[in-house]
Length: 303
Image (cartoon, rainbow, N blue to C red; front, side, top):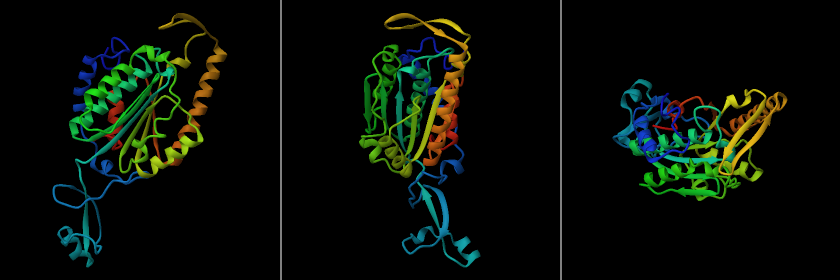
């Protein structure tokens, strides 16, 4: 079994996070048409100059630099046209990671939390390798860490390693929203925002902040769940945590009800996010973090 899909322990160490660098390096490249798409919620800055990639060709405006007039198109159409450019190496990215106590669970391969942390590690390494600016805020257990400084990859990886510890399951849930009351999100403009969380609900105040975040940025919401958790046979199960082992009884009816409740809530969340212009995608824990990272690459959230 692949050490990426099924690590030896859900608690990840420095060696595992170092391994993620290789996976990040070999993701490939996103199609240019997607990387510079101007879809809803995305406000990619337009800049003019040499050594940059063309974003758009449009009719000439008085403020345009004469050096960027496309003379061939101008001659063909009889109207002056200007090339607009997007600076390829100036990608601003914001990573928001929020794990509930329920994320420290899994019926196969590893914990949901572990899969999120592997993905966050790949995002961090890829941003470093591509020279992108990465800000982050991560919340787990009773911990909350944030940074908008460059050169913080070792610090971020250390936070991710600590977030993988099973003790975070019993340290209580951080109820604060990772996008509310935060200077990182209130001042975020023209960024690729990646939200990684297993949570499916938020308050009215949080919703307003989320809408504003999506208005000025390209927001991608990644959810990971364990579909096998809804297919367990009825019976008693031994659940272990730092407090010891306890028995949990599961019936067929309770399993069916839990599945129905989850997907009903998930459908409502997906529709709400879509109305904000946020791209939501759900993955099963059986899918590798490399595959999820490739999805983000295809959507322009990674480069």
